[in-house]
Length: 95
Image 1 (cartoon, rainbow, N blue to C red):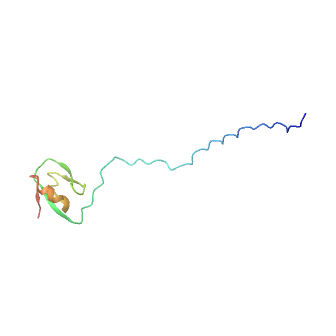
Image 2: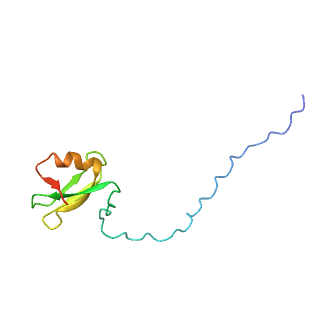
Image 3: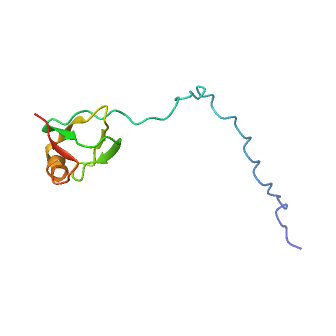
């Protein structure tokens, strides 16, 4: 009979203990959602809205939102958007 090394038993490695998540700052309530006020474009012209119902128009070139209403009929509009808006019956150039 030959000599055999003693049998060894391999124990599975112990699973690491779960760690508690690092503390974080409490979440702040951002308040009511609202659209940020876009800045007037540098190369712009003033357009007058000729209707009274409030509207939100997105510039066809810049994608900027423009809000017009009876209370705020004149807005500065990116020149690239103004061309297309002036072709409608809703706007004219404001001087």
